[in-house]
Image 1 (cartoon, rainbow, N blue to C red):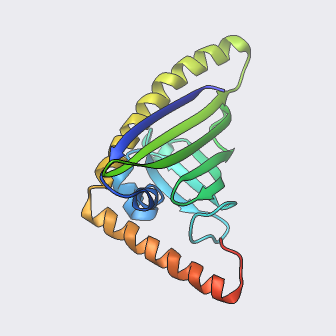
Image 2: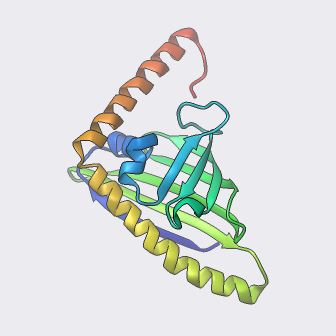
Length: 181
């Protein structure tokens, strides 16, 4: 399947870079130029394996394409992956993922999309060529915005608060003997 990816060095540790990448709501819409609307589904309050999200892109304003995706992996602070459950009819498959590795005084963040398009072979060739250009451009814009978010005091404050809240929740669940979400 075709892939596009982008990477950047950010001056924060992996756990904080991971947390920034997983912000949601107004904070996420504030830094991520792709997202017009995004929320968790099925009563979920936080990302975790199996959690589904609804996303409307900002590509065409209020008539932009939408996608329901599901977290298929959740491994803070090293990686996270999602796959499309339903979405734009031109994708037969779509997935995205992040990887975070310590590098120098910060973190190397890599964001990757894997996709395929529908249709006969001649149409798929056109779709993949267009997808490489369009998705490649989009992922570079998004990772640049992510890098800026890692330097934004408000975004970093919210990401740190989320890290602390998740740590407290995990401590409570461990004390009760409940599985981690």
